[in-house]
Image 1 (cartoon, rainbow, N blue to C red):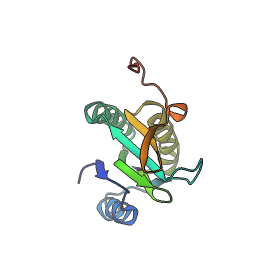
Image 2 (cartoon, rainbow, N blue to C red):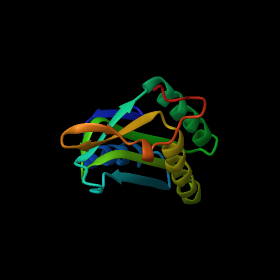
Image 3 (tube, rainbow, N blue to C red):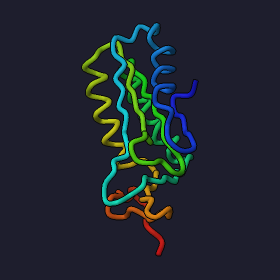
Image 4 (tube, rainbow, N blue to C red):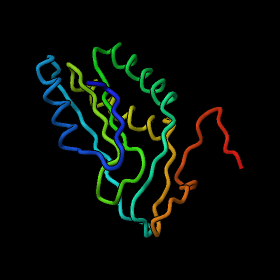
Length: 147
């Protein structure tokens, strides 16, 4: 199984989280901490849509895997490409660690860094159309928007 998984559309949450549990529960990790992000119904949107620049995402994720490995932990992540309707999931992250404190701290750091630095562009879905959510987007360091 890959520790970074990308899916078209909404994530099959139970399938992903159950497969992670099944794969890693016998690996002597004392903690498997999971975060599931759910698309909220707000601002009259029907959902969100995502574009991902996979080479930079992989590099970003690999750097996190190295940080986790230094603490005898691993990080796991699944994210959606394309359209994700309200009340479904677009993002799941997990940290597996022998020690709960490492997993609890790392899941918080990982999710926050993901929001700030992952190369994923978010669009609102309104009236069936994608509208760039610039007001809720964070620029990637060293990158610029082309107008």
